[in-house]
Length: 117
Image (cartoon, rainbow, N blue to C red; front, side, top):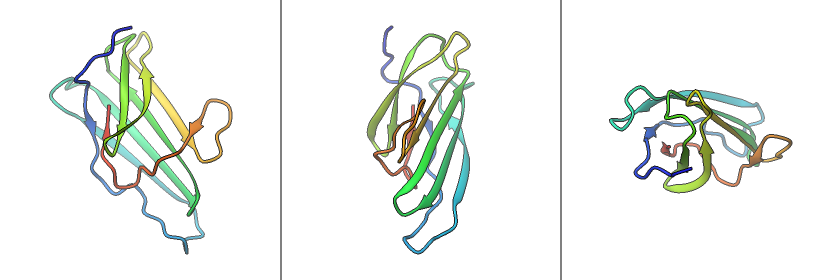
């Protein structure tokens, strides 16, 4: 597969569920991502769940991208994963502080950071 650089930018500069050490309740945030001029039809949804100061999850679902293509997932300027789209141009990934089958280790804090694909 060929990697496309510069890649599509789905940018979200929003506060993604801010939680403090004192927060005991689970906080969930869902954010629709907006495409830029590279692929104007692209769509995405980011989800953040903050359970406590050291536990949470982050998920990303993308659609209307080029099919069978690799994209870098960049959070706050740091590449955290490479996503591969299916035949329909969709991709998804999930991260968790306690990863299980199908999830990657959440080793970054996405809250308030730009999300770029």
